[in-house]
Length: 112
Image (cartoon, rainbow, N blue to C red; front, side, top):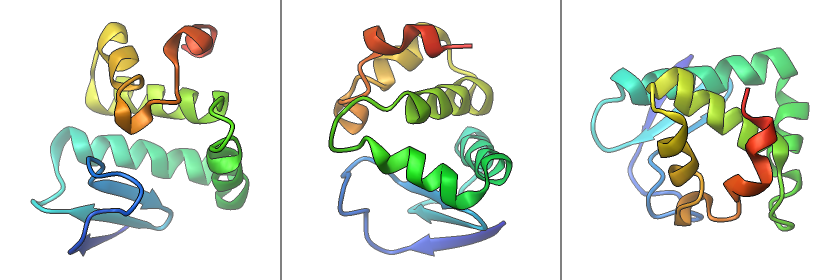
């Protein structure tokens, strides 16, 4: 993994600070460590397991539609295993403005 610090926030989200596009991990602000790093490393592993191009296509494929079971499952696992958060907190995070279209009530069956 190559860590790259960027100077400006991502245009699509004012809150998101880290993005993994294997083999690069882009981060904003302070050094990337702890649960933030673990979260992004899980995304890197997901991209390697699924192969980068299929992972990327599935991750953004349903972005305009608002229902993406693949992205919900990958984010849920990264928050649970990388950040160590509990189920109810992760559901709340995935329903905030950053992930507003990832409605937890539609995806509960994906949480394994």
